[in-house]
View 1 (cartoon, rainbow, N blue to C red):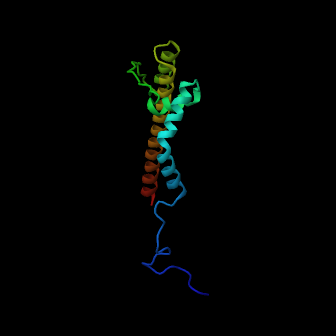
View 2: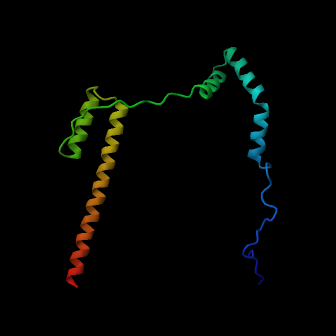
View 3: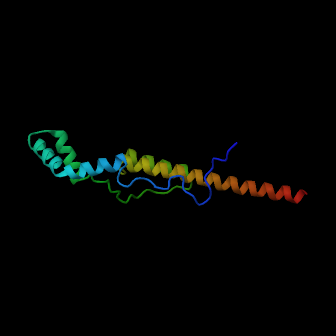
Length: 135
């Protein structure tokens, strides 16, 4: 059977990938060339009441604002579930916006997972040490 592998240091495609010939590059180049006309058409359509054209323009010119989290004061409990209860109560009472409350609960859940992992690692290490002492 013939060896079909390339030899080390030899390219299987010596000419390389063609420059500026990929479909994505050609599409980008075409759009870039026509961009002034595209924008002009979108502006005219938006002026004529086309809501979709206006949305496209506004989304590109004025991207949506990201929500800014304000500092919140929630009493931390002695345990994660107690702190979680405080977050839920603060959210239900309106002291904390629901999206912030949900983010805080997710953060507490992730913290709980980290604590569990650390406790398991510590327990495994103790078991390994006990087994090592028996030998």
